[in-house]
Image 1 (cartoon, rainbow, N blue to C red):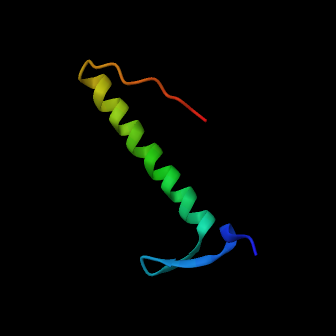
Image 2: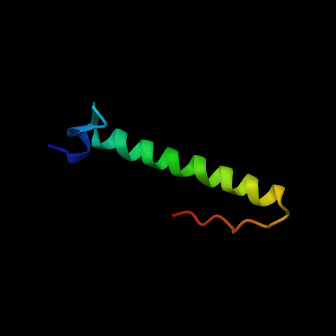
Length: 52
């Protein structure tokens, strides 16, 4: 069985490991965007994005 499809309990919800990974990536993207907006609003140049 593919481990990404395995259903686990997270904070009282049953979700697949793939869903957890997608949520973590979305969450980190949200905070990065907020940090970039904060830096720019305060006159700082945010670091360049480095992808995969």
